[in-house]
Length: 376
Image 1 (cartoon, rainbow, N blue to C red):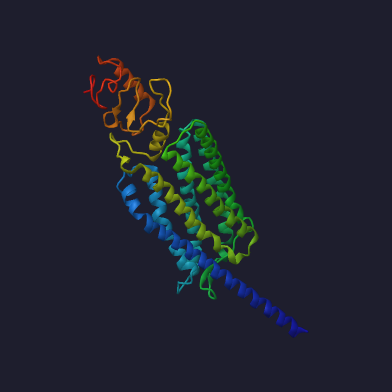
Image 2 (cartoon, one colour):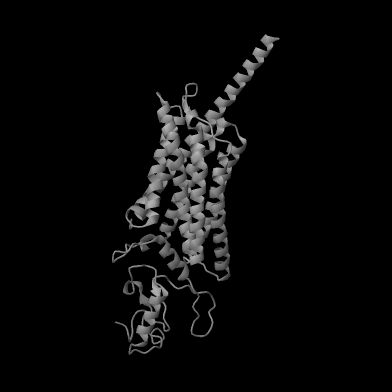
């Protein structure tokens, strides 16, 4: 009877060891897949990064957030592969515990940086309205504080249990029963961002706003929401319902995917701008969000002189419209901020009213565009 009980216990232990070994290999494969995806995307987008980021003005928040995640996240995932991939030959308890703490907070900061990029885009689409800025700042701060309030006690409560596992040659530890809740604050923040994006997209659709920048903003915004929501729900479910041996499985893969999406958000928008990216003068900084709003607001329908237009005519962003057919090139009206605001247009119209030239159309008189009486 005792022998049968020992045999059953041994079989159960061997079965658990087999399952744990399978879970460790699954986690390793997912980590390697995420890291390969991240590096592959780096290689694919490096020419665009060199042209659109390195050669552009680097004195803005978007660029620094881009650089921080672009080059710190691969280092984090590389150390994780060394740790969890079985590549290390001599793991120590000190290393395992120190990296467990550092990695936890770096993951939070990395996700927060990508969320910040998306929040800045949404704020720009809304024209930086005060209530939208307050909503985004408040929800963003609550998201960070809530995440840190969950992750900090969760890390230090199990820190003493983190140690090298000689069987699998990895740093192994468990998580607290409530640690899955760390994904709730980012999910709530993502829902707020997506709701604001949907509202503004419907509003622009009713106003027939059609620009490449607007299309890219909404397309990337919707794709981002779907991808990052899946990357948040996936680890939440695994950590809530899965065994402790699968804790590492979703974490590294989702971190790579979210950052790839964040890089694409920046590069896609700057790729639309192309050679329109310009360094600002007068000590001010060129900002992606100003260009976004300039392009969206610059797309307005202009009626012709007969009182109707057979098709919508979109004003080119490189020109400023006045009461006459006079078109002022952008290089004559360039400001420190590349976005031409309403105040500048009012000054242009006032200046035109003071000029002694005929306000009728020079084009109707047979002059080529940009020439004729009143032109300098």
